[in-house]
Length: 295
Image 1 (cartoon, rainbow, N blue to C red):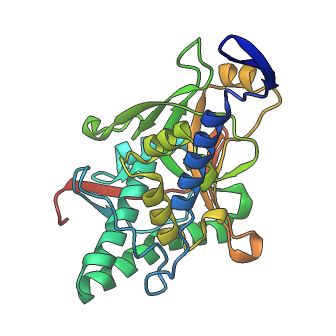
Image 2 (spheres, rainbow, N blue to C red):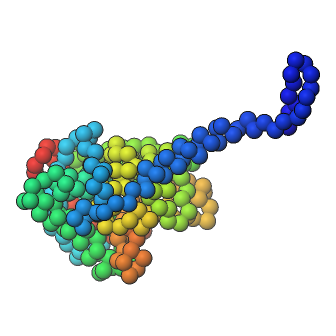
Image 3 (cartoon, one colour):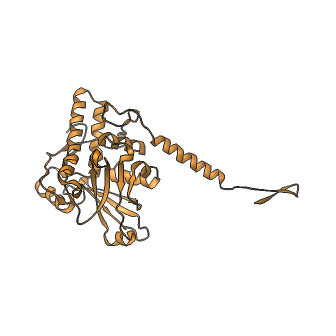
């Protein structure tokens, strides 16, 4: 409550909310972002994704990926898979989260922009990639996720518990494909929907680092919808919550990025998880990566 004066004379007391304009602007900005992310139009010929959102590939290198042949005979932890690829499976590299997202963009680009033959190849590549998720889950169920060669290292800054290092192709024999990013990883309790993550600035930066992309939130969501055939409320990021997260991040600094693609009768969720190391075992795939439009 403050007093209003006219020519030095006190006439009345008025209520002045000095923070009102800032709050209204913040609410408008938040609503605009939510409106941008709430695109729910008909999928492209049954393959998912938003037809009005074209894949953003101009700002990044043009890469092509070739998947190895699927083999679900073995499950290993990340360290043993890396060793196996470095010593026995050249020229393939263990797939990273960056590779996964790059493959998704390649498939979607070929599907949207390609001729009939390219579209058929894109559909076959999509089936080949996602069937490995499904087959692995069917064989191993909850005990075995899809492992990626993306390592997360917590507490790289003693003054900021959230600041973490994200390394794609950790310990790869081919040093040229190793990439590192620094990003804050908040403590997301339970599963957090991808739209909620991407509605926050640091969540957007985190997902861009995990996928090695400059894509904006709308494109990231659309690409994940396309490949998973799931709506955004079924696409989750999970950072497992220990009893004391600060203490746990210091003692167990390393995490491995994994994915779970659950059937419709078992929640239907597509989960991107930061699982503990050592201890998390799973199956994976190899890729050959090459710059250019063909491989």
